[in-house]
View (cartoon, rainbow, N blue to C red):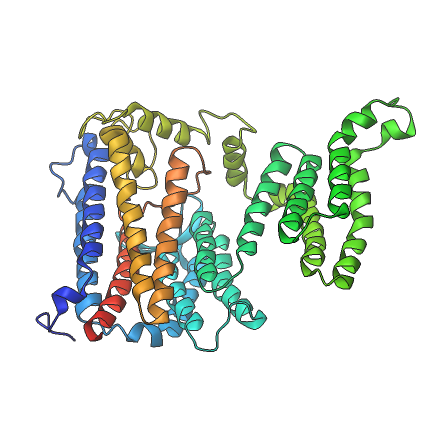
Length: 481
């Protein structure tokens, strides 16, 4: 245990981060009260309502923060990362069988009036173990066994959380790829993930043929960028690509009853790709053009993804997830069903205008038009009552928080602290991106809280511990250097 009067303690703590954290939780608390005040709470401290309960969660969160900063030795987090990770992983599995079902998701333990969600805590333990493994002197993310170990650490809890039907919490784990990129992971993998998402969406909204053309176009551009010069092969590929773009129109000129008229351009394109792929592999090997051989593998993987999209969409995703994606992508209109939340959310934010309707002046949120307005859709209350200016202030605070954490992480002399800091920043960013994207119709409604603002003890405690472990680690360094 440390004495609060220790030399340099006031200087060693990053009070800018602490103050930003406090401002965000106060903004959240006030907006939770605003979203439910029409239900009749006597005051913002009324424990019979969510605003009063959130006040209790805030007090306990501050107690946790003080404990982490001034009592727990920061060096213990690294040594305890493995048992903490395994312990929380056991809870993630146990909650599937012993937990209670809330809104279609069996991811909560219930102890009387208190509910606890292990998925929130798993972000902390995963971040700690990831930082422990990646900070080892002989670790290289580009080495296959180290990459597979990292993928295992991230993949196991992610898959278990998906089994709990907590898609939003599982999606946050994708953000850890930014941590891997900072530690030497190739940016091409991030590009591949983005390209895969694009192909998946295009296959659903356009057609497999369009997706095939986009896939070939992407590979053609990438090989051009990788090559030091543009040769005759590039122009042959470019002309072939143009022909394939016009192929449906060309085949349409023939009699529908003729052989050419009956040809499906998609199968023609696949047949050509099947002939070209061996050539790409052999040519890449002979000319020592590794990227050309990798492009052949990328083409195979892309074709496999395109033709498995329908199966994934119809057989792996759940009904409510399919409906939300269909509404988001404009494949279906459902203003009174799954699209209701998003429509009401956008109406609430849009009605706030530049400066908002004023504190407690919202109508969409106050009268319950927006579901989950104190949890997943808390940003709607900010938008309606405080307008564009209020939204800008809140987003700016989050951006400042993330940048400050990354800045402190880069200043750190310890690789464990740096990597953990990037994990914290990635988790906050993913929550921010998904939640706000969800409220303005850019992301499907998958149920994910806005860090420090949304109502709920599990989320608030988890982000408090996540952030203050980093502050404690950074303070430990500043104390002695």
